[in-house]
Image 1 (cartoon, rainbow, N blue to C red):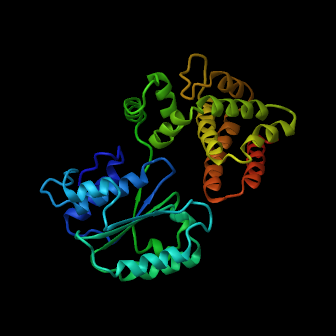
Image 2: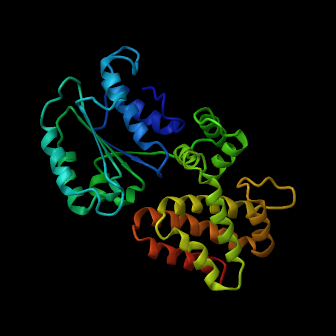
Image 3: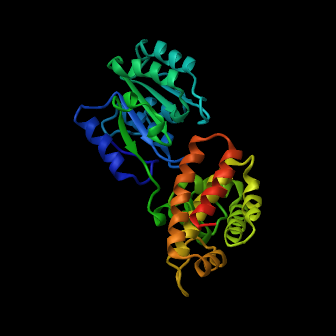
Length: 327
């Protein structure tokens, strides 16, 4: 298998390629990873490899490939829920099950790419389980999910899980610099560090022009962390009341800032680009507290992905951060 548009993640590519080439292609695949890591791109690349009929697959130019690339292949079904809890309804799963028993129109497979399956409720997952247990030989399900723990153990046991992650920072910076006009390489390199090689989030940040906004949010939170006024942190976080995307992006940046502060000495290269905030934290918080803050960010990001209530999330951020620094 070849994956032209999906960067990095050699292990995941190797696993699925080996299974396909040894005639053990799984009928159900879970692609797990954060938003922006290219899960949907990976799924489409798998579809290309399976449906292409050229000797060198995928050729990306035959009728099968062309239809997949343009999103009009009659045997590739794509659906993505919002990702919020309960957003992937059982009625949609039942519709898919009914359709899968109809033979492919023109390809050797019928491929169902189902996005944001972390939003599946228990009823939807149990309905899907019936399809996963005994699907027709020509059916392949590809589920994308931010965290596989959102899926039932019975669903997981019937799928091959392929975790994906951010790519090496230099590779991510090179790719994004090539695919975005008018952005200097130093800024792109900082984004690669901020988003830990998450190309999708890097491109989104450039498109929306919100790098400066996110940096401002992170700076205010860092200042509030060393303040004696407990309301400063709540005020700094209140801007996220209706802004989940920037909340997640700010948590990403804060993790890098906390990591920078943990190893900071005069002259240390600051990967986050937020030298003032790093110097402030490193001068006041000890290593134990900075490690606790890093661990807090990791837990908060997972909570943010699963929980749709921003008000509760903001309260949790304030509580977890203050607990990490013993305030």
